[in-house]
Image 1: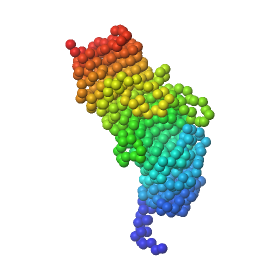
Image 2: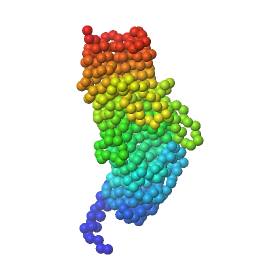
Image 3: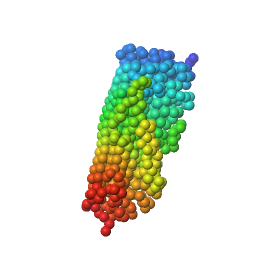
Image 4: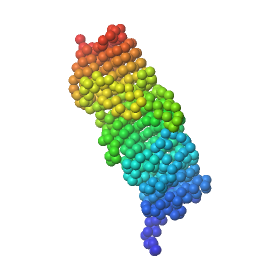
Length: 538
């Protein structure tokens, strides 16, 4: 076949540009392994798996190299990524996952976890490897729409890495996984930077799952997923720890920032900052709700410890519940025939500088269990805008414990408080809460039930209707202080005290528009409340 000079010139220019790009990235020319040189067709029809695998093997065997995908469509089954090899997809290059499940061999990792029940196949797989990377400005498309309605075990992840060290992803676009988009299990030293994930093709379409991993950095990413977006898990007896996340835009039909659906090993030393959450900043999904379920969701339900978590500077839009903190006791073992895990623990969580709009009426919650409180939580500088719609019946209803239930931000239904409901909590500090109510609501703004050690410093309330319920209800609360609060005019009661309440202090509050600043329920002694220095209506 005769090729025109124009085509050859264009091809040479493209290869020159690619070489320059790789050189700028520090890739020496001798370490480049072009999948075309190993027989890849790149036409989107021929199976290019053997050619790609040969290039990977050659790069690894040579002591390191870049497996290069020039523009084209490369149809493939499982690729086993090996140490010292980088997959680099050029602009215009697309790696397509096969739609034939037989192209994905069953691969059971040595590291056992609860995810053995979910998946054993993937498009890109690595286990026990080191210094591996996926880079470029091309696309990896799992073609997940071909796997809709299939059960676990018949849908591969796009990327799965197990017990690997020094893993790097950068610049790549990931879309349409048959299952989770990317799962990192028992890995260490992970860097994910500047990737774009769009995952709306079938069930369980998470953006990213960091599971039993250590020393992780995620930054500058876009993630739009049908299921959970930024997802931290611990599906075995090792914690996910030392994780830093920053500068990400996240959309999710379920939960945008989530840790703890599986929590056997727990979560330690996690920092998340400077992120924007919007349920749908792109196309709507496959089966998810029109509005996402949760914004920031932190859960311990299968044993394990949640400790030393900081989350700050988050803009949340269009979710049902912006904040959900939960200590439960589902106690699910992660391996067959093992004993149930013991009760987990939850301490030292700081959440600050949060703006949330476009919410549902359910309200936020911090809930532990009787005898097992959530400890040491600080919420500061929160501006939360709720739609209203709660009734007096919602306020008075008993909220079930649901100790062994799957944790979900809407699991308790419409809460007794329109802003924040706290139960079984110890050492709770609330600072600078700016609460806005757009519609009528017959519930208190805040309800505290079985709370020990509560400090609220700075609360403003804005609403259009005249409130019919107390601003705050304290039920079985010991050791609480309230300062610098400004309820709206015509608030019937500032603080309602019920049950076994003791050592409650209120000072420096502007209660000039409150009808009755304090109300003591049946059996509450007058000495349970000390108040002074408040501005009170004459």
